[in-house]
Image (cartoon, rainbow, N blue to C red; front, top):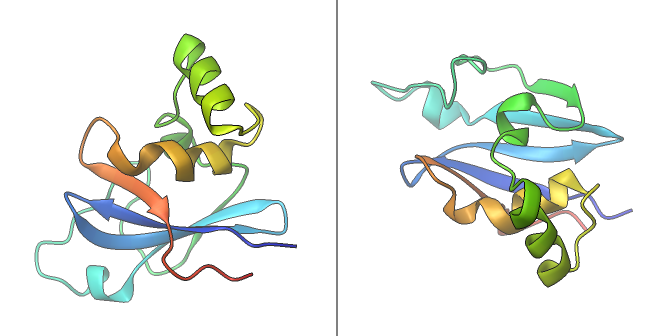
Length: 111
């Protein structure tokens, strides 16, 4: 099974990764980000820590980045991604989200 992975950026800076793990989704801050002076979390609900945040499906912070309503319908059809594939939609639509957080497919995904 293909394991999908994304890069999470804050104001253009790589801060962590998000990946599917056997039905769960894990977000992990990069060690380099955690050691950086002035590092800030991407959300108050995801404070800085070295341990991954693991959730069944997307963590609510990432879920809230997804398109909704008519935009979800259009995005799902245009991208040929099921509305039920939240992780796929996150990788496909959140490279240019409103706000400072961006999520895009990792440059080297496990295949």
